[in-house]
Image 1 (cartoon, helix red, strand yellow):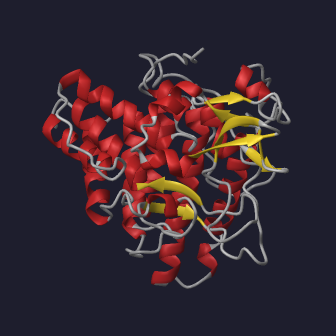
Image 2: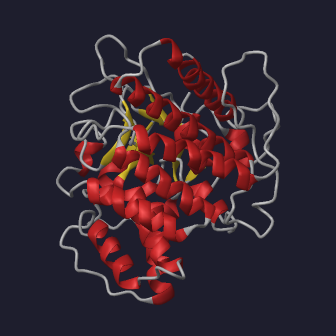
Length: 376
């Protein structure tokens, strides 16, 4: 029901609950949830369901010939298993960089076999869980084919991107840079200024590394849920854009057009999130591809790592990467010249604007060991 595309924003400071909506995700917005409350437990159960299906494939690979095709299937299944465990661990355990005791704190259950009766135990530490995620992804990288250009199948560029992202959360900035630069080398475009609105209307794949397709609109019509809004005599939003964030998007920023639509609902103007509203040329609500990993996400992680690494610190490269993103988001952009803390703050700022409503914000705040501070 859309939990995985809103939870990271509704828990943080990017959204405000709309009292004219159905008040879905209200317990998450208020932090008043219990262990059996949706959406906070929906992410947990759904991710383990994905893991069980990946394990079902992996447990039965020995029953078919070990062809190059099947080795690729094995690599994809291991990568999917790793990605789902990552979604779980960043939500339900500490993130290694958030505090000094995080690595030694309790991890999650890392499930590697298909067994409906299993009662798995949590890993002894978060560090062990992250190492298992990395091992699965590195195994996948070794076995995956290039699969160039197909963003609906995992390939080398997307797995390298995921490795870079996991290492950023782990606090290993040299590895973040190593794998991230390799990913960027294979897929450089962050989504051009000309294509960026089209990207969110499924009229372009420019800047996507891995997406879940909603391929057959006429037959499938699989809605991503109504976590953000419904079409009921206009847009009836469940949650709207926090006004402080709304003001942060300049009129020259293409993301404002791609992400937000200001229009009335029952004669009251609202700033609606439209990232998942509909495809270009379609009126079917919520039937869109889900962008799981984009090049811009990887680029911002690498830029941040260049500012934080000891061995590989390179503010000049960080600024170049940041400017490469900004020139594709702002019309008539003039390259920035920030240095030091101002440059790192600019990277954080662009991450918030770029990844808004994409299940990133809360996890970034948590990763940085910061507090959620909502505007008034």
